Amino acid sequence: MKHKHETLKNRAEWEAKGYRLPEYDREAMIARTKENPTWLHFGAGNIFKALHGMAAQRLLNEGVLDKGIIAVERRDNGGEKFDDLAVVVTLKADGTVEKNILGALAETCYLYGSEERLAEIFRKPSLQLVTFTITEKGYSLEGDDVKADLAASPGETKSYMGKVAALLLARFQAGAYPIAMVSTDNCSHNGDKLKAAMTAFAEAWGDAGFKAYVEDGGKVSFPWTMIDKITPSPDLSVGAMLEADGLEGFAPVRNARGTVKAPYVNAEESEYLVLEDDFPNGRPALEKAGFFFTDRETVDKVERMKVCTCLNPLHTSLAVYGCLLGYQHIWQEMQDEDLKKLIYTIGYKEGLPVVTDPGIIRPEDFIKTVLTVRFPNPFMPDTPQRIATDTSQKLPIRFGETVKAYLKSDTLDVRSLKLIPLVFSGWLRYLMAVDDEGKPFEPSPDPLLESAQAYLKDCKLGETPDCAKLEPLLRNAFVFGVDLVEVGLADKVCSYFKELTAGVGAVRATLHKYVEE
Image 1 (cartoon, rainbow, N blue to C red):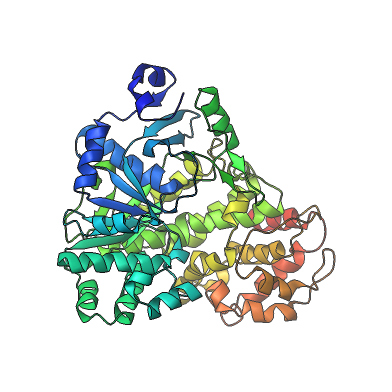
Image 2: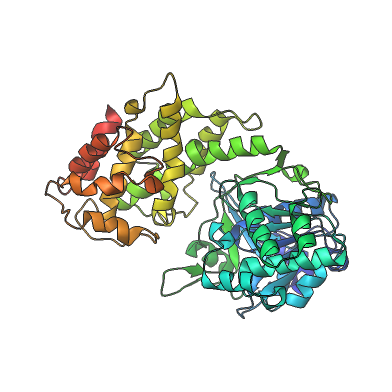
């Protein structure tokens, strides 16, 4: 079967194989969307298709929406386009699989290659929101390309943020139409990062009117959001299943770097998207698709609940120790009693006491779903190696904020923390790039990997480490969120590290010892 618009007309054949097809007139939807677009999205990757795209599909099916989304990819890298259709496979914890043909994408444009069409879209008064999933790095103002753009004219931009700013300028020049610029990337206060980038370009280009437009919340808003849905790399078994169904060209390809590319998305069932309700040109009724709309303060509370306590720290704990213990999947780790006790204690005992209930999602309900449904899902192919990427950038938020909360508390003693310091020690042990069997492994990419490993260059398995050489790293608040020496946790971290490096099997022995206490 060709995954094309024309072949979808044979609904019976697709449905007989368990596929859910669009239930609306897709041709009419595409025509309406192209003529008067309301929603544009930058970064049309896995999480966008599985979350934003499927939300739009549900509302199109129900008649709540009559227009879809225009997706923007970085550039056209060739390959078959499948008529802007995508396959989204939901891997449920009960073992069932839901296969959807996503038809809500009305058009695909390219940041590098579709400049005129994108400017035309931005000039449309009908455009209500522009959403982003481009990773936190996408908003950076560092790099030679961005610096060159800041010194150049709007028509000469080459950086991602420079091109977005030029498009927003085109909207201003067309009539200063209102718009919501909505980052849905997984980073704290994401709207501020996008606003900072747009403001920097407005200032650099010296257009006072454009700068006032960007800074006028009644014209251009930059809502905060919290997003949560696990969409791991395409799983080879999912590709095999789709090919067995007769879909042509769906075999995933693993490149030399180990990255899997495929024309489908596999994702978990659970999902959350919480948005600050600030849309000066109106918005689709996405609350009917399960999105939460609230105020900025509540978004911040939900984000802190997830990132600092109820999910991300637990993921990082499993990532560090999973790599050391040789695990290949997160769900397998959830069958390990020591690892389960590690994250249950960090979540419930050490983390929840400092969480502020955001009101719209109970922390106890959220963490229970994480620990009993999401992480143990044996059909989700997520790996500790993927989660371990950029760990040095994650520790200060995922654990440092909890440490800070203990320091500020009148009733909690930071020295009572036991397993969060064990994760810090586990990361030091991970940096040695030798697993618990004494076998070398390749650490996941991390911008501070080499510099952090330099502090451990003399550490060897079976030899007592000189913790004095680690002190500069332990004092690095950029890595841990706090100066561990100053707050009184360095000695505990060093003590654990000595035990973790005692020899082969020391990681398991140390982990078991402290989770059992």
